[in-house]
Image 1 (tube, rainbow, N blue to C red):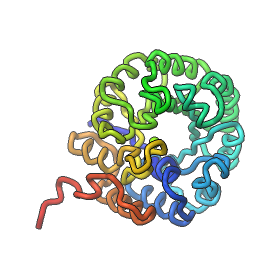
Image 2: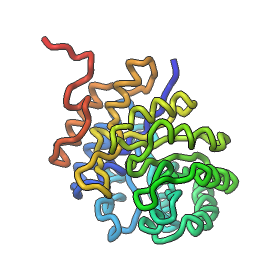
Image 3: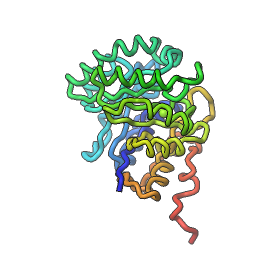
Length: 296
Ligand code: MG
């Protein structure tokens, strides 16, 4: 049986794209997720509170969760300052984001892609010296909301350079849900495989699960997903964002893949996420229940 590693990103990527919620609710959600059997959770990001007020309480949330020894928790950082905060908080897995498209990178962190890549070696060195692994997330890997199509060769070039800089893992972000199976194939067949590859798909245009299947066929075994499909799309109000974890687990489990996640508990966590944000979340498995729940 093939094991697929799911990283739950709802508490960070999900809640960062929702209206702010109290720290206590975040703690409750992370603890509920830790109890589902998921082995990796992206818990917080260390960003400037003025830039992203939703994550201003990262230290408090991290201090208050019940840390499950079977779960690896990670943090996302935009720069050296964020990396220092993540290390000070005791994180041993840290993610750094660079966008494949210049315009998105400028809108996100006010630098060109090249300028961000120039800062990457120092960031990786800092994280390694502090005992943490460094994962590079390449945002807009499959398309950019400002520039349109992104050349897979450009993405492959970034991967090559990042590996040369000593990055431990590379993740491909479909930031605004522009990927299709064809584009997933275009990128994944071009990039170097010297480090573990992860995929982070959005379901903005309904292709999330199809993209995961395509990546699976190409040997990727690590995926990000967000409980309930938490986290809208910041560029398209009302649109769906991250693929829903329970939809991914539901499909993979029935196909014979092992994720370690208890689907019923995960659906309960999705119900909690829905109560926390106070809006109906887009997950079909949350609405309809798993396929094995027959009518009494
Ligand atoms: Mg996302």
